[in-house]
Length: 396
Image (cartoon, rainbow, N blue to C red; front, side, top):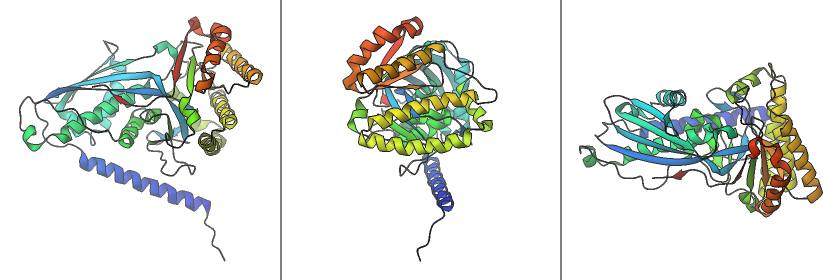
């Protein structure tokens, strides 16, 4: 007689294994943390990280920035944050944040809170004064979430400073007014993703090239709720050529923030069904990404976008972030696809703007379609041409 394993017990076993792996990673990072005397030195580091657009959406979280369901995203290229940290030895922790040349205490407070909550991993910050300078390559009015790109770029800078300190030799630590050498090699992207998640959930996906998966799923071995993993080597070549044309329907501030929207999922009557559907969509989408099945890709991507906004409408209180022109663009995109057989589809962020996704081979036709048919539905005729990108990049 063949014994059957209870799926629930299998799930618990998987969760226990994930927790053990996470604890092992955290203990490793704690043991590697630089806890010595920081030498009298100064320096400057810089990294850029892109925004990302989710295909299977992350909407609803639990615990400490953990997702209720897994998500898959394209990593963008042109929509990115460029962040620099100037650091110098100090008697105590000092921090300031400048966005596009102007001090921004509100956003700076978020970063400072993140640093203080995780100082066990980065104890050296208590001996440094940090001046953070950041800018975005996309306009604030575009509605593109900048927290993913800015927070991941900041974490990459922080990890480079840590690497600089850890790489100092015993003799160089004794030097006065020394300047650390630039980091050789690469930053641990798993660690970068983990701490980016703590700073801003979906930032976990922005450090990786092409595509990333965040959240535990049976569809991908090694996936985790604690950090994202790269899908660059698991997808069909056609998806590495994908473009994302972002149609700016409205540049107004959203009536409900994403943070508030996540919180409202706790009382949403459709939440359990949503999380189950998202897990099923992950499995089917991942299969399509591996095989190059564009029809399945289109069906799941558009369904996920509409489900996201349906969940907003079913929250208590309910809210609507789409605009009339959002719906007009969606209808025209579907008609265009049916008439031309060009494999274009749409997705939506947590706002009114429309992302048009299509392979490189369709770029010329889609560009003409936007300029001739859709531009009038964009605020101030504004749209952004982007494509799948290479993730984080060192600037200095």
